[in-house]
Length: 73
Image 1 (cartoon, rainbow, N blue to C red):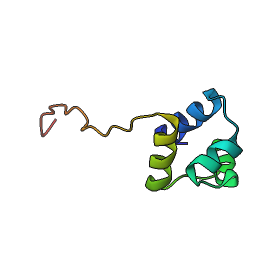
Image 2 (image 1 turned 180 degrees about the vertical axis):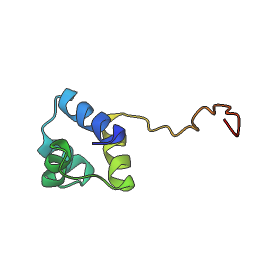
Image 3 (image 1 turned 30 degrees about the horizontal axis):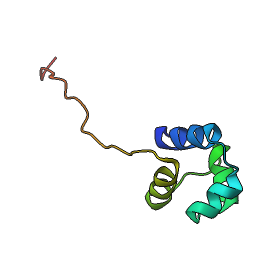
Image 4 (image 1 turned 90 degrees about the vertical axis):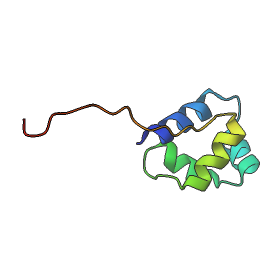
């Protein structure tokens, strides 16, 4: 399970809402939510965005810190 999926799954579990209510509010099928939470299925970027917005999460993509390496070693 990827980091985004884990974070969304944790937010769903921490919310006071049922998967049915979250599915209804986001337009994401309850079965899809269940599969994702069990680690059986990933999610599209669109689904991640819908769930994050509904759950009050912010998605941030940042460049990784670069490390300087010496060539030839």
